[in-house]
Image (cartoon, rainbow, N blue to C red):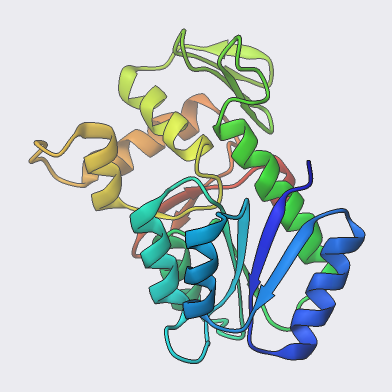
Length: 231
């Protein structure tokens, strides 16, 4: 069954181009020109993915993204926007976007990112190997049930916090997490220590897993990219 994608974009030319390329790849596509109409679509048939412009009439893409994320963390969102400052990209990812593509962009690149994000969503849901509960991102393999980590095929000796942080990043590829978010998600809401604990844990992971694509988002926190993204 074809993945159902809703494109939320008010530029007719971009609508037509994106729709044509996605349909050519076998996707089921619906196009709408406002976040309000997109929300109505959400009420009747939830898509497998949103492709979302930021600068929309009425409710903007940021508010729509926030509204969707209040309902579900599962449906991936690719943001397409003329806003190309680092702040805009970080904000889009922080609000729940799974990827961010700046205009003008290649339709072929968008299609490639759509396929990649959908693949990662399936990995996150465990569809790639539900029986063994494995998650593979590039050269990183995580046995979730057994809480074991493999890097380039070699099992690594990791602590509980190292495992929890790696699993969090691996199930949220390209998403930027603030240090405060990481403290809550890895250490728990009752933790009252310094956010330096996050930096120290990242350093230990980088030392154990040489060249792991765990990147610093300066002045904010960290994110992980797949090996494919690093190439």
